[in-house]
Image (cartoon, rainbow, N blue to C red; front, side, top):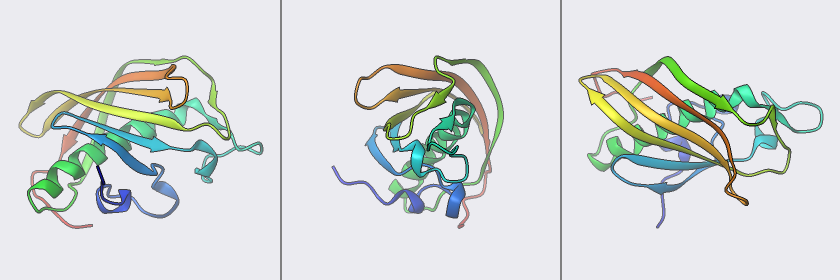
Length: 146
């Protein structure tokens, strides 16, 4: 299956657009790919990225999920805001240069403009879970353009 360019569904641009592409999408779940060494904004000298950046990877996967759903009804990506994180667990201190990650966002609750997602980051090659968290987000009511 072919998915739109990530820049068409996530309301970020330039160096703040950290995800590379959507690799899977369903009604309540979207999985994106990221290569930490390409995140020049956060990459350290050896190309690795601190694990705390994973929270932004997860938030952008949530945005990608919303962007995919909006696209299905002919709308652009909606603006949102990360309100909080619960049960965040990092199994690593950093993501390695050369590593490819899969970042999944699974919607578990939706009430008006408040949504909750279970998110995880896995090593794309081994499937090892490297991070997980539950994100609470607020999505702007009005559909808008970037």
